[in-house]
Image 1: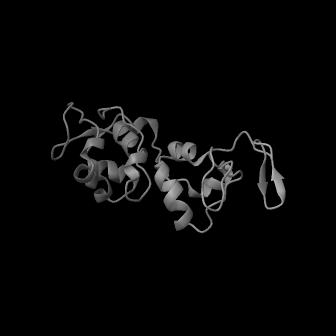
Image 2 (image 1 turned 30 degrees about the vertical axis):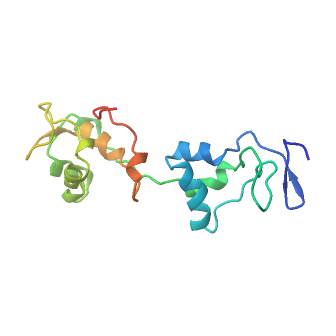
Image 3 (image 1 turned 90 degrees about the vertical axis):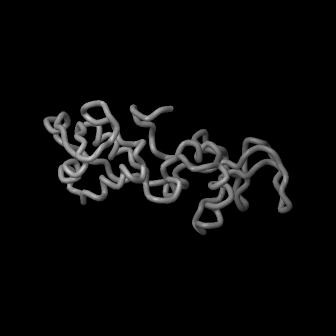
Length: 169
């Protein structure tokens, strides 16, 4: 069989240029390659089979190259982020406390204030250029950026948090 075709059942499947390896997909969505290869196929019975298996693979393993997957079939397994919050332009320069920001976006104050305890490195500097302190005031624009960059739920989800301008790299 030619190396640019794959067999699926009795049908021959031509590779699509959009197909990806699990390593590429894992890097794109923020999972580790090991998690995607070893855990997801076992944890999710409906995890898709590859469109093209590795060349030379047998029941006992072996073979070279990487299996290729259709990104559309992997989409349901992409980590989900919370829905972003939008505020009117005139509110973005306002100075607020963490609880004041929570009221602006319509969530319980503890949802925002717990960030200072759990992930203080993700809080922006206060309006006076300091790190958090009791009753500190922040620009709404900075808190909104922090809030909308939250990763989805789950252990290790902070690895999927995009870098924030004030965090050290």
